[in-house]
Amino acid sequence: MATAAKFETPRLKPYPVIPLVAEGAMAHSKPFVASARIQEAVGFPGELTEGWEQRAVARMGELLDKYRSLRVYMDACVHCGACSDKCHYFLGTGDPKNMPVARQDLMRGVYRRYFTFAGKHFPKLVGALDMTKDVLDQWWSYYNQCSECRRCSVFCPYGIDTAEVTMAAREIMDSVGLGQKYANEIIGKVHKIGNNLGIPGPALADTLEGLEEDTKGETGVDVRFPLDAKGAEVLLVTPSADFFSEPHVESLIGYAKVFHAAGISWTLSAKASEAGNFGLFIGNYEQLRAIALRIREAALELGVKRIVVGECGHAWRVAYSFWNTLVGIGAGGKDPFAIELQNQLDGRYKQPMHICELTHDLIARGALQFDKEKNDDRVITFHDSCNVARGSRLGDTPGGQFTIPRDILRAVANRFVDMAPGTTHEATFCCGGGGGLLTDDLLELRVKGALPRMEALKNVVDAHGVNFMATICAICKAQFSKVLPMYGFDMGMVGGVHQLVGKAIRLGGSH
Ligand code: SF4
Ligand code: SF4
Image 1: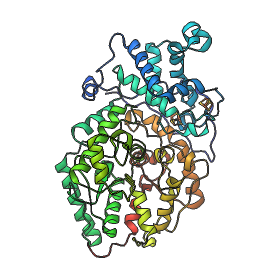
Image 2: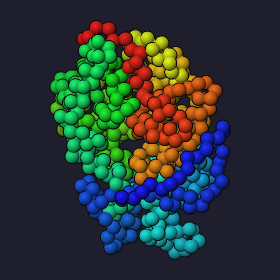
Image 3: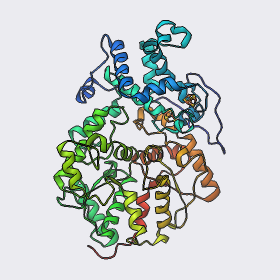
């Protein structure tokens, strides 16, 4: 077992400072490599074998042909530098290879060598790189230091999306047998058991029963947490962390109370007991599709009319941007099962819908009542999660992904303060643990990458007494729970929007 590198938590500064460049500062940061067993279980080669260089270049060629955006990203960069100080991992580490343009250049050099005239004939003149083990080692390190947060792309005049470059690099590495243990092991668990945590159906049923008892004890009301209830109106697909982890479970309790108070019948599914889809993180659309298919199957088996997604940033991006074209949920698919599901789902609702959209809509229609003062012990701020902020939308109007969670927070609590402009909304800083990096073998990276968010948080803590940071992402919640104490904050100051909803909602009698 490798041991974690020793490192110091960065010092919080009152305002963002572009760090001095520290060449190679994070070259040692690499995730654990997946074993042959883990790799093969998800259909990848078990390890690097002879001829991997040619196979990697061939896979790159396939991706360039398939995704024109990738080719445009390889060709379009003018090295203007506008992105160079926008990555939280550069700001937290000073390693120049964590500048987004430098991260892209690790692939761009190989692209030039094998896919451009100049690179084939005059490689030295155009910075072309042979696909060698040394280059692969750099890919392994630095494409696993990108959380695919897309902040840099907001500032790029050409909209070059480094996240997509990272996804392609990880797909190429997986295709030659070099995969990340954390992400690929989790994908294997979803295929085998149904969720990232590997919780089997009976354990899930026990947990939900326990939550019913706890909630009855707390409120005196019979709030149900149904599992595999055929004929329910809503299938809730939520990150499996909501079942077992703190503070995530508090949001699950909040969703259940919303359904109860609104009189909406709902169910969870043992088969689709995971909203997360790590196929996105490894840039593999076959995995993305296979994982999403479980949700389609569960929805068909249970006969639900609506599919609602819980608090999970990348899961919502997958649901919002990919479920239709990949598996036909809501629209898009042409195969018989997709058409059957499209006919089954209620067309009067958005399919899929985010739990915040559902709650927001119920609030707007006066269907939910709150005792806001129950959250008066909290001064709340909101952390926009990258995949919701920059990879999807909530509601029907541009920017709904920013206004809807904030509207909900203002409806359920009296004291809300935003962090500084430039650190929220579309310019939000990643928590530091997204994109498949939420693993302790990358703890140094996670802690240092959290620095810009921690600095923005410290400012509202000092100026306004903020003591709670709400978010709608399971990864953000887990990452902040880990790193907040390292920056001198209370780990309990992070939680979900529906944690606060659940605290303030009036339940009335049982339905
Ligand atoms: S996508 Fe995010 S993590 Fe990746 S290079 Fe850009 S800013 Fe950094
Ligand atoms: S901002 Fe865009 S064009 Fe400029 S260096 Fe970065 S990726 Fe290249």
